[in-house]
Image 1: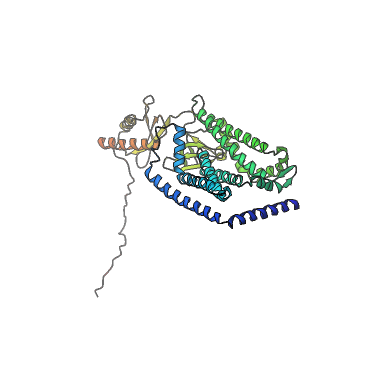
Image 2 (image 1 turned 90 degrees about the vertical axis):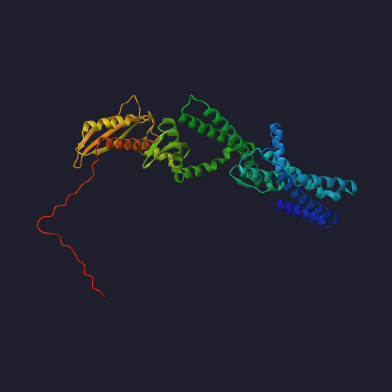
Length: 438
């Protein structure tokens, strides 16, 4: 470790002397001024280019790769113009004076060109955070390589190590593992999306089986990607056995609910008790299942709200699935009439009104029965079938409004509470107020 620290100090001192000698030269300030001028011109050129070019219709008739290249170059116009101006300045100074007097221009030109290449490569990514992370990391590595300090930096990062069991952990190893994991996860996401599109296009599989297959494929590809990435950087997976006990304790204590929800999700997908598209009632919440995730299901209520219900609750609690085996739904409407009405006529009107609704099933005629002779009047129950539970409340409202109109035509009245007060033996006391004039 002492030798490594000594080498590091010598590296810092050598770099400081080189930078000091470069700064003390008048040619440094000339190059620095040219770089600042190129940056100003590039900024103005980008504003002019973007103001004159429509990015949406740019090169629409060109082949896709060429169109993509042109759009990336236009979006990075300032970098492209800056790099071009610096290259021209470098060529002029290279032939007009000593090559060492334009070294800073050469470095700036290479850095600008490296950034253009990085922007072109990362333009295929969709995640903004990943694009920034990959771009900055790649540009930093390119900068070290351009100034000739990449090998020294690699050796420095590999010189500091922590030994855990049989694993030698260094900053270089962590960086390599992180970079490979990002690449592996990106490729895994592409493969998973492709497999998901193929599974969704298959009509022979039920929605629950499709979701189960997609989850198994994603988990399998993720595990393979991690193993390959760790193996590629030289990490022996058997050396990680030291942490298995701690991980097991963490899962047993802190991750009980997460593991329970994960296993419950697998059970729900396997037994097909609920599936995407089902209309369910869980507690006081009713809606359609819009998505089934590893930890929860999403239930869309139809009014803009979505309930995220843990998978464990669906396994341990009562769930009403309106479309489990059959989407046909029985609609029940309770109503009453006064005793002046003919109950036979009331039942006939109710059945005809329900049957006239466009969503009522024709093969299952409505039924209306007299259920009770109550204190205020007669009570009836009207039942009829619809093909789908969606909009059931709207159907009930339509039938009840039509039934009200039918009762009005036939002179049938709906009962309402009437209270009659009789006073015997005297009068009720009445308070009187006497106004006294001022």
